[in-house]
Length: 391
Image 1 (cartoon, rainbow, N blue to C red):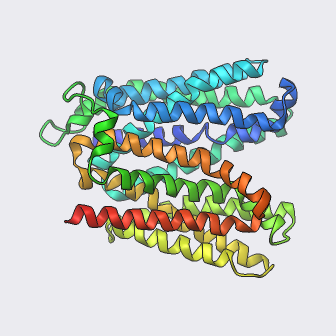
Image 2 (tube, helix red, strand yellow):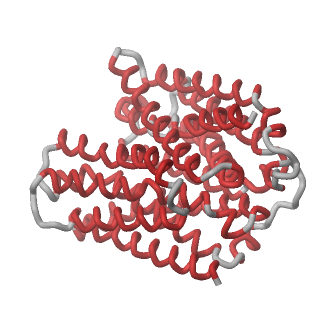
């Protein structure tokens, strides 16, 4: 029973990743049809991010009202519907409207599933599940790219991915009874049921000792990951003099490093604790940032630098989530993970944009210093959190 439920959760993480990269891969052919500037993609992504933040903050309330299984099924259904509505839209304004349920469908399920896995499964599964998210995030753009390469429209690509989400929704609905049967009442926790505890107000969550530290840790982690991934190719072209095609390939190795790293981290986590995994990742990523600062145009140096940053990022996010119930208690972990997810999305949304503004006066060479600052803050916040909880 537990194994079957775990398989469904793995599928759910693929579903979480599927829609994430398709807007970027389809936008070059979308925006001319809507007669808007290419920069307008930022408006859509901001709307999606705002919806994700709101639903993350509401995850505790929704999970306690509906249960993890129902929240997951409804959220995937919302993204499936939004993707289909994207495919039949001929107006940029409507795209912005459909982006609202698109974002709302992502945040609560992300927080609910992460909390459930943190409560019931070992650290290795958290690493492997986030590896499966990477598979989904890679599969979505591949489907869109293949669709466009055979002469079909971007709308067909959206419908294909929507259809996959519909299939996953059906599987999730059929699997709803498993969420109740997989764990006995003796081992189950308040967060996995319905209505067993009152939702914790945001003010109370933030006032929990250590909450602000872990929120800043998540914000800084996502600032490092998303900024490095978003600006890697531009940095290699403008600072290191690497040609555009090679730079794009090297930049992809950053995400490959994260995905592959999380697969192997599942095995490493059998020997190391969550905190040790986080520290190891921070050290490896910091070495990668330091390598970026080496004043050379040699291609392999940039390749090694971004690969190390990706490998270092791999264990940090899943290990931080997995240790949350142990650090703060199972009774508040759902609310706290929801706030952590919201903090992560704030970092993901704002940090690349801020760097883009900073890069104009300071130059693209400021990238390693910029992400290095966030890495330093993350290390300090995590150290403060561990010391505070070990007292």
